[in-house]
Length: 395
Image (cartoon, rainbow, N blue to C red; front, top):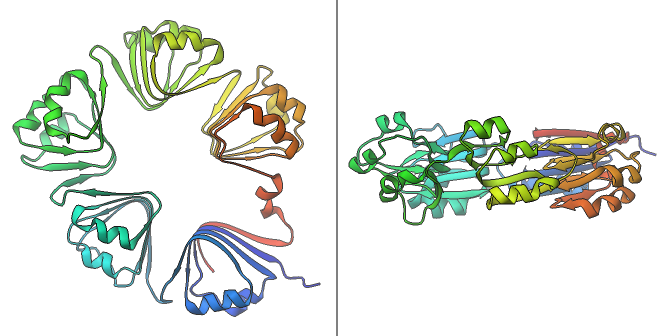
């Protein structure tokens, strides 16, 4: 039997353009899992001959000598950006394209974006035909000043604003600080373009004239305190904020005292509330984006988490597991213990569990992306394979 191993490559981008026959022949089998793969006609012939397995969302054939550039975060393409014709560009985040970049976009061999593309409206058709975007393309008025992400209107913004200018905001416009002279925007003939805005009720007369008619508005009632992002509610915080709280994000309710200190609540995101406090929550919060009722210990937003027997035994009150990216149930955890202690699985991207474990967890599961067998996610432990996990990889 051949002592060659399998090669398993897990990556966001696999550049195979320079792969050689010597490399492929060194393995019994080559399996590539990638979001995007760069190849050439020569490489495609080699891969076919050696039976390479390629699972990719995007497969691009590019010249072997085509330059490749990668950027994470926000990258702005300007008419003066050094960009050789035939370049393949990948952006993981936000790509901002300024007016006058038509030739750069046209001459690129590939534009790959995992995120958002902000481009002039006059270039929208070109960008949509040229780019591979795992996200959204957001056209903006050609004459606009582009502001990526959400923008908070404050004294500094009002001092820096340019008379007669149009500002395009890719996120939301926030006007939640009391006492600002926002009438100055209309006085200076400024336009704000955004899909959504969050504002105090008192600012409606000042902001409506400078916003698009189709902008989605979230209005914070007069006399309410505004909180941004995840908000763990406590009795002390509720009292300090005057009892009426508007939460733009998720709300975490730990106990009855926290709710008792509130006279009114509004939540744009998800409210995480103990099951026993459901009635008290409904009484003060008639408007919310989503509601997760749970019992026991709440664990949420862990990128990866392994559920063990010892963890379950530490929480006799039960555990609720929410929004884990990758949740692995250790194979030796007794299904009876899972049935007794796991009260909720909610919003997890992928759950690794045996068939018996899955059977007892399904009744308490909501919005699970995928269930997989433990062997599927432990393939890298295969002693007969070389496993490579990387963001990008050139073979």
